[in-house]
Image (cartoon, rainbow, N blue to C red; front, side, top):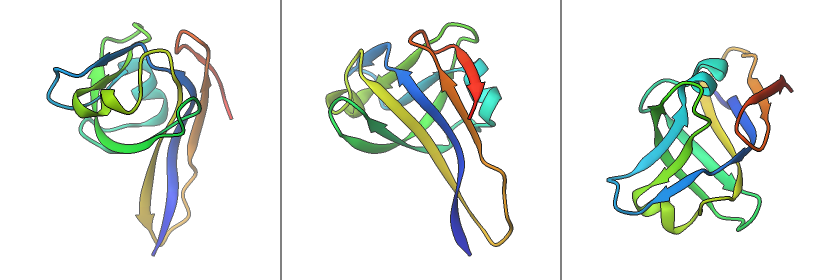
Length: 113
């Protein structure tokens, strides 16, 4: 078995950081659908700005909103306005084709990478 990249959302911008929320990351439903994220799926988030890395789970946000929000304790590590990469991995013994997308500053899909 190997750990292989399942998906990546590249150059996303954090639109909000809400410490008072219970926890997780909220991601625009359109982006979730583009890469095949499952609600409550574990993701790894890395920040271009702070260098911080963290794991949490995904909550779908309003489709077309462009929202990508850090919630709860994660808001202490990655702040509003930071550029991030959001990734998930799969443990498998079969080859998989990862889905990698690039988004603009408003978190709108630009292209597959």
